[in-house]
Length: 176
Image 1 (cartoon, rainbow, N blue to C red):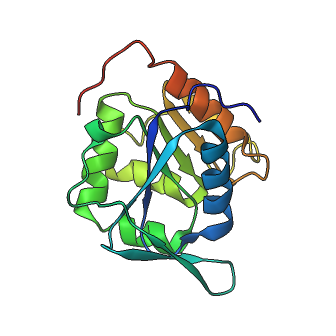
Image 2 (cartoon, rainbow, N blue to C red; image 1 turned 90 degrees about the horizontal axis):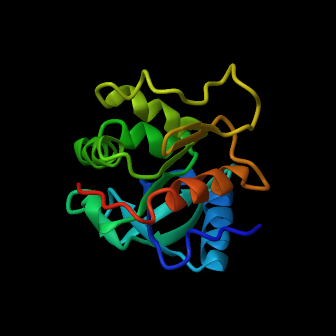
């Protein structure tokens, strides 16, 4: 898969303990192959733990905490699937603040599966076109630079849509 616009870009991946490890690894691998810099922004300082489907997975070092993260420091935001971590992020004021800043400034955002529920927490964002469980299975839904999916795909078609969203801001400046 060719992700031509992500090379050299700094992409924040927002997590709390309990994010889907398989989806995270697929995103991490694709972004590394594209030459992007993936930064883990977590509620937890130090290490954050993944969920591997049946139990706790590996621990990953956080590059920044949500309490200190600013959208302006990144070129895009990804919130991966994982009900456990979304339940935590929905109650985290800093997660809402960061997501709100990305959406307000129309910066590239990818929300996978459970993460689409985060839109209801941001004023005006729930009305934006986004993937819903009754929508087309697996097809990414694109609304300007917001990309959402109801399923984390094996082929990561949503990353192609996210790459296009990143490419659409190449010659623009975004503040946060």
